[in-house]
Image (cartoon, rainbow, N blue to C red; front, side, top):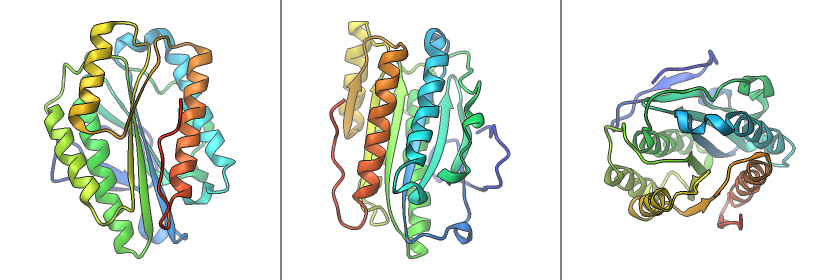
Length: 246
């Protein structure tokens, strides 16, 4: 997996899939509990018409989280995918996420490796969460997969995504894992049905759908993601995260 930014993060291999991930070293973490946040964004050519609005949405998510009372307990990872899967940055403290980091990042070409990206996001969450738990930290996680189309490039399958998600749900290292599949600009009945089927087949916690992607709807999406992150983080320590209304 290509690494876009040069953050000083440790790299890790995964037993499943074709990609690894990077993350902050445990000795650089000072809190007793963390929520792992993973944002996975489709950058295939079909998103070109709303690429700038999507970048603003990602910036707004990061900015909103930085004002959260739980800001010091969030570790954020950003991935993108077209034909391949990319890690723009691994799990790093929210305080180290700069707005300028997200300028011009959603550039892609080729196909849509939706299954590969989803599988890696979940597998990395479990792997890193297990390390944090081994360091006597409480940990839960939330994963957002944002796409506007069908998979046509993955080596993995929807069943492989379900397998790794089932493993994640059973992992004792994570108090809770919340997974959200987000269909954007879905105004084709065939695509809508495809993504709904993937949601059910893989076992995501929640599916939401935007029929049009524009500044207003993506700002609303940013608000939904920010509120969901806050809800999941507040659930640490025995609480239960819940699906929010979009």
